[in-house]
Image (cartoon, rainbow, N blue to C red):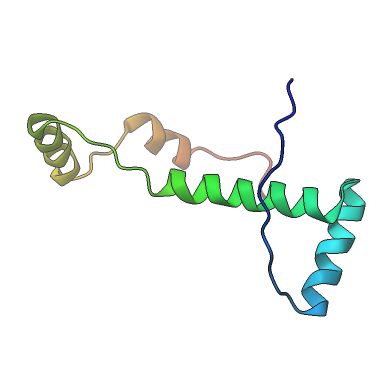
Length: 91
């Protein structure tokens, strides 16, 4: 794995309680505060971007999915039987 050269700087102000929590978490993780904060921020940023991802489909596909979702729910006979069965591990 090739290490990327770090050339950018980010400055921020935080209160002492927040710094203490981050410092303790970084220490437990065996990382510097900078590495811990970078990893945590990067992970949160990736998740946020994935949550906002747009999935485009053709109109006919969208209509088909919309029609399926609009149909009334149908009972799944196997699930009905499962829920009616006695569960030995629950008294």
